[in-house]
Image 1 (tube, rainbow, N blue to C red):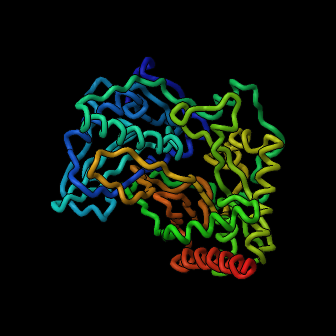
Image 2 (cartoon, rainbow, N blue to C red):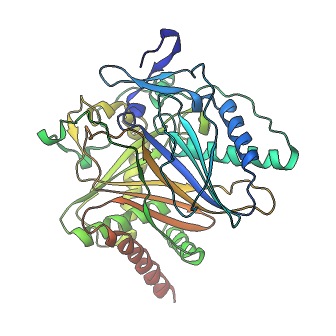
Length: 418
């Protein structure tokens, strides 16, 4: 694809570039009960595109595969796609999703019995979890305004910037530690390739378990009783479960840490693209869930206090992409996006479920080590949800094992306090 120099916003930074090769879109999806006004939702999405012009920007690649962010083209933006189908499915849209056309798409699937599914896809190179949730919340806010008042008021925001740019603005440079040393392995020849063959678009919908509200409260109470975070507790359960299913000695995990409120000054959700550093933890001692959660929390606290996490992104070229010199092969990835807000909706409309999905618009073979398994953790409508992607031949056992670890820890706490 050809583009003019005046179209260029900037070359993507490493925190963004790692999502370019596959054309990775991250999706936020809800099922809807009640009468959904498709025309109003289309108007809300059009307002979202005007308010957040990053959604109609484009990403192209140069001859070396570097992602380049371009301003919107001079053609009409792609609006919401509306069709009839099964709202219990999250689908690859029938229409083409191409980062070279725009970076945000809305897929709406209607059913005759007043049920629907609404999925917002945003290119991961320009939006992480915090940014995507903000966009999804704005979409439903605009929809509610349109239904209730017939008007949508939305001023345009500036384009978000990368974490690397934010660090430079604050005078934060690269330190001696990446924070990933606990899971770093030697790079092997098999990881240095990467075919350029493009595969058809593919959707990844994590398998998941949803704790009921009472079970979720027990996990929260366990964390509170021992002054550990829910993230630490779930991560500890994940490490124990993985070791229980697959065996082995040492287990390690990598997890993103949202830095928006940790930077000075803080950063608004929509002001950055991928504003997360990475932290890692590894151990060969997983005998006690609570103790393990406490050690995970202490490790993170120390790395945050030492400034390791916020500058970890400056080490990304050593771990991702064609110039990498390190590998994290075999690690467990854990992404905890916290509590998902209750989205605004008109009276009579219920958004009763929430999922995180991923779509690769033009997948190619990877140029880096993938996680052995990826866990996604979030709480919506008072229910703790744990999702899983990958995991190998015994992956189906992993979620059951994680829940069993949490249940066992909660039961032990109840017995001890009886």
